[in-house]
Image 1 (cartoon, one colour):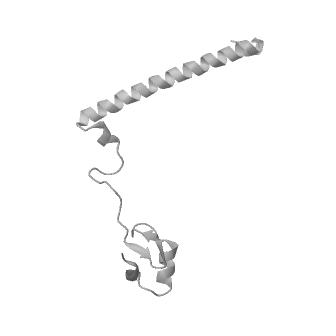
Image 2 (cartoon, one colour; image 1 turned 120 degrees about the vertical axis):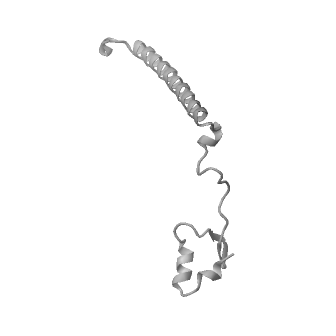
Image 3 (cartoon, one colour; image 1 turned 135 degrees about the vertical axis):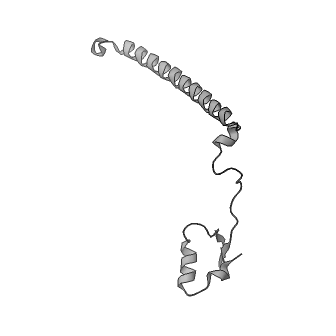
Length: 102
């Protein structure tokens, strides 16, 4: 196929055909992936929803707040991960982190 010899109309038609074929193949790939995922879920005896959910099984919800800034109640921390700047500043000023406990 020599694209240089094709007219603009022919190129646009070809472009439309390519877009349609790409969409058809994408839909085929998605359908195939769904079938494979369902087969995996069935092979382990697990509902699909449970298989694709994030996190370990049985864990739901969020972590409770353990620390709150006394001067700004909107600043809260669960105690997990890095200390927020306001907690670090509190501790660096010589105050006990226990005073921030909720």
